[in-house]
Each structure stands twice: as structure tokens, then as C-alpha cells.
Image (cartoon, rainbow, N blue to C red; front, side):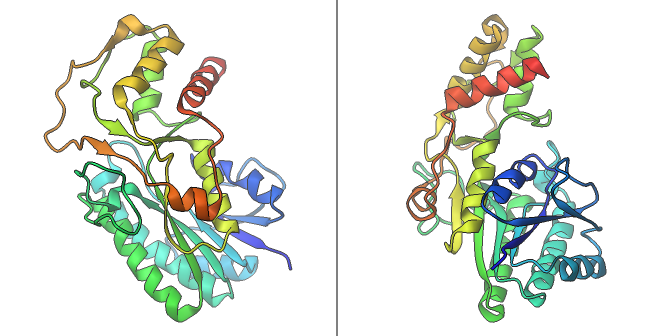
Length: 299
């Protein structure tokens, strides 16, 4: 039986890195959106994802058995409380419904660690940690998850939900920690930041993409954290970047105060990803940051 996957967000930071691995697993890959991917072996369907009629048309034409839904607005600096989150909830529901009504059976959607209530002192676990998003982005993702899971029970869908933690890597937009630090320190500019003692779970974007592909190809259902399972201090991350760029003298730790609501730790419990999905990261943090700095120098 041919496995055909319909991918949204296929030209995005994560999505573009899922296409080759999907093909390697034997999927017939179709993507839908406004811009075609660079890979000419991929079947492209032009459509406005906010137009339900176009979504239905494309889904029927593609006739996918699998859905990987990654599309969402994540523009740095605005996405946390952007009203566009509301539009993406509606669009995502239309996509999932069209997929199910076209005969699709397995769907994986991108969630976020921001669905959890932050502020605890241990790893965030899919089964035990409290859900309590503090932003419109997190609330919107959590609401979508709840509706899709309920719908899946009546529509006969197998659904998994990948909760992304923090990520970095080549082609990351400016306005994010790693990309901005690399650009500033490579250019010999001062990079001012907080004390950096807060702990965060960072994962290379290639590993994030690989985790989504592995999750889609599995039969694991429910929420699955997409994280390394090991939080590291922001200070350590920036010191690695400074060392790799030769910008140690330009790094100003403690030059900015930490926000009052800045949690001490945001770390993924990665048991489900490792034990049930069977996915292990390719990059250590040191190797991944070095690869990202090397890419920025070459590009």
C-alpha cells in the first residue's frame, strides 16, 4: 500500500527538512501552500490554507493517507499574542476535517511546550504535567489539540501531537536567541543579555524535523514532547557560540534584567520520544551549535 503524506508548512524552518526523510521512508510526498519547495520530486498543490474550499479541493486531489501539519505563524516578536493564532486554529480544523473526510487515517500536528504551565522545577511530562498556557499562542495550540483529539475519536483518525520545545539551526530567522547571538558575535558587535542562568531544552532543527517524521511513521498516539530531554543554561549556549565565533569579548552576560515571569527551567521529558517513537537526536548541543555557526560563516 502506498503511503502518501500531505505536508503543510513545507517551506518553513522545520518543514523543509522533513521532505527528504519522508521520501527516504517511502512516502509519496505532497505539499500544500503558496510557495513550492525546492525539491522538484515533491508534488506541489497551490492553495490558500485559510480558504476551506481550496483545502477540500487540494486534499481530495492529493488523496493522502497521512497528514503532517506544521503550518502556523511563528514570526519572532509577534507570534506569542498575535490574533493570527485564532485564524490558524480555524484553518487547522478545516485541514484536519478535509483530510479525514478524504479518507486519511494518520495525522501528526505541531504543538508547543508553551501549552504547559511553566514555573515548576522538573521536566515537563506529557501525562503528568499541568496544562496552563500563558500566551494566546499556547492557548490556541492547546485548544486545537483538544478539539482535534475529540474529533479523532469519532472520525477514526490516529492522531499524534508533537510539542516543540526550543530549537535552533541553519536558516533560523533573526529575532531569536541563537541566530541573533551568532550574527552579533560574528560581526564583532556587543551582544547584551540576561545572566543566562535560566535552563532551556534546545534541539537542532534537523533533529526536530526527524522527530516529526519518525512520529508520523509510527503508530504512537497523543502528545509527544519534541525535545532533547536535557535542559542547559542560556549562559552555556551563549558561551559556546562566543567561543565558536571568536566573540568572547563581545558577550555581555547580565547586562539586561530577567523578566519577572521568566521561568527558571523549561525542560522536556523525552521518554515517549525515545522509548515509544524510537527517535534519538543526531546532534549534541555542542556539535549542533558548531554546525550552525559554520553554516552562517559559509552562507
